[in-house]
Length: 223
Image 1 (cartoon, one colour):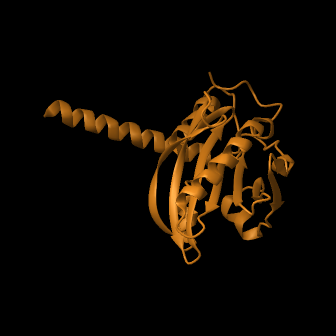
Image 2 (image 1 turned 60 degrees about the vertical axis):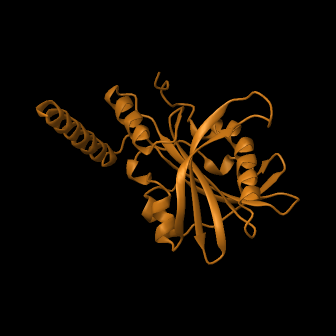
């Protein structure tokens, strides 16, 4: 029992230390943005995009001007919404999207992890782990997938992203990062179709992101 108690105390102290470090680094300016989210292609395969206006209030809440909100549609009438928040200076710009969703009146029905295949279906390919939210509001159900980047690193874990930031800053090698979210509305009760639409778009999106989210002058990535 004493050993277990000491173990729990140690874990608690380490957690508090990590939280304190995250807070300290969030309050510091470390790296200018150096990215142009608007240069992400308006055409991705069969998808054509149109920017969604962003209010000054949203910029204030996110504490960064490097925000992209864009709706993509295809010839079948299918639609997805892409949201990207980038910051090279203020770590407070990042937080799990469900915080905003729930604040906007949506009901969270389910949250979990999902693996998205990045190549053609039924072919060997790479894959990435993402967060998946199933929500509902007056307009119906919506699925959202989101993940984070820190330099060239991609992760589904917010706390791991923060650790990458801290580790690189300790090495005097600061990096920027982003939150990326893709969402698709379910038409009626057909969640399977919304799931396929969203994942199909993610497969088109992921290959083009590194060229727009990693500044040319960024220091070498964490290895």
